[in-house]
Image (cartoon, rainbow, N blue to C red):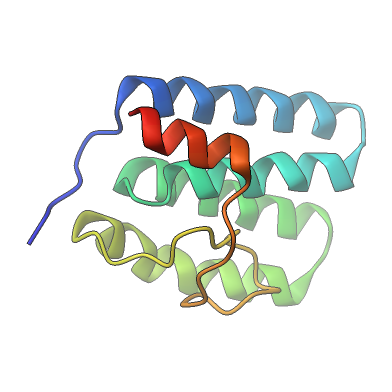
Length: 120
């Protein structure tokens, strides 16, 4: 069994860049774009417990900010199980992490992120 503890540096840089873009969009009330970058941060970090959990934490806060009850409850559930599933490398690759998709559904990975994964 493979244990994921630390995110590789190239992925960490891309993850942080997505979070910066998320923050910028959120501050400028570009909520659709903010969510898009949050989903991308989730895809990049979902195999690593700290980054995976943090993406869901931000999604929870976003759900509260948007007064989206479905998102809030969906993120609470994901926060309870997401980190340990990352640790044991049992995640649904490409899953964007929002409550609008089933937590165990694998999804297509955007090509630029797929290239990042291939170069790590």
